[in-house]
Image (cartoon, rainbow, N blue to C red; front, side, top):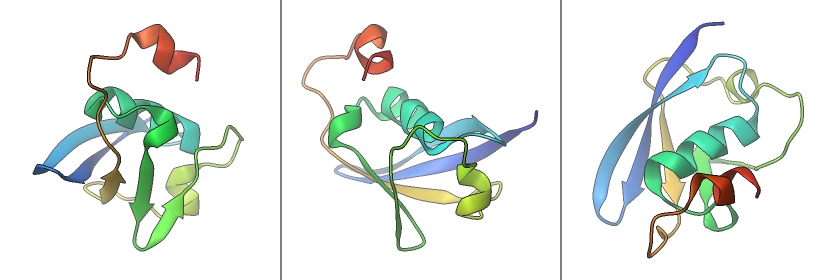
Length: 94
């Protein structure tokens, strides 16, 4: 399966973080990759694309198709990074 290059747009401080997801990723997969890249806990993160909120759900729906994500798309990411780095097991178990 091919990969898709996206950018996460953060506001505080303003910056863009490049991420890569599988072309058939679910919303949960996008949230997991975004959390690792930004250090924002899953329960405090919001992702928005073209004015639509992407919900963190674990289902078979492909987030790429549902939201028409394309190579180079910018997803707005809201949330406060954790004070200390999150262990990967804490991210995987949420």
